[in-house]
Image 1 (cartoon, helix red, strand yellow):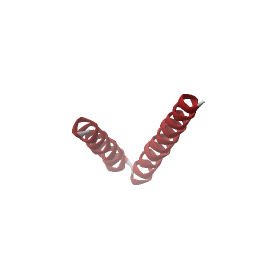
Image 2 (tube, helix red, strand yellow):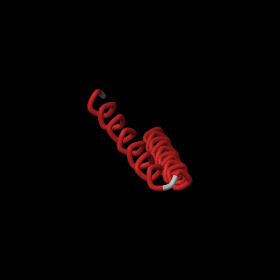
Image 3 (cartoon, helix red, strand yellow):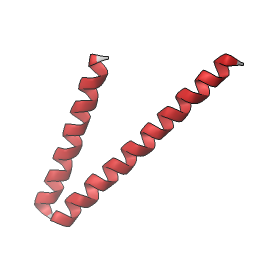
Length: 61
């Protein structure tokens, strides 16, 4: 559990540092990069939730 939390925290720090680096180059690019990272994160979380729900339903049948 703690390992997962630390891994997620490091991922978020890396995401924000990448967006900040892009923002230093061009402010609009920084917002675009951060938005793309957040969209990708949202997609992956929804996918993981759907996979977990499907796995739990298969076990009940």
